[in-house]
Image (cartoon, rainbow, N blue to C red; front, side):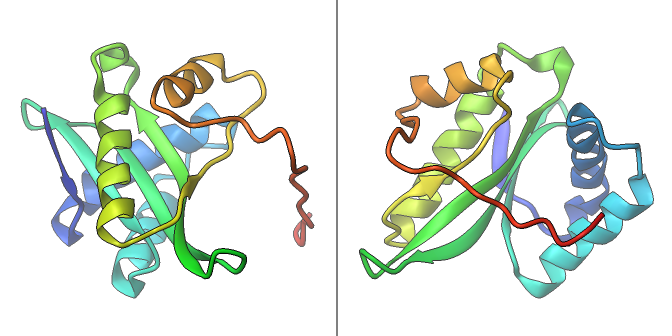
Length: 148
């Protein structure tokens, strides 16, 4: 298994995984939209994407967005997306992607990595907790939706 930061050469493989990730969260398949979104993130440098490859096949990715913590006055990362192809789940791909995300955070002097997952995504919750992520018991998360 190889884990590395995705480049423009990886847009096709990452876009396929990103489309599957969105479908996992009950969104309609939109490979063109996924490709456009991933391409734009890479061109603008909005995010950092790591990919996992086994035998020349794209099997997983994670996408992190930079942010800042005003209270600590330090950089932080939001791990917004993590997806592993169903056929290789349980083989440590997700864990290796989380390790690479942590390395990025340490290298950039970040205070933390935060993430959200669905309340019923127990598999992901176990993975995150196994890797040191703690469920926030002190703050509620709110969102203002601006689209219908």
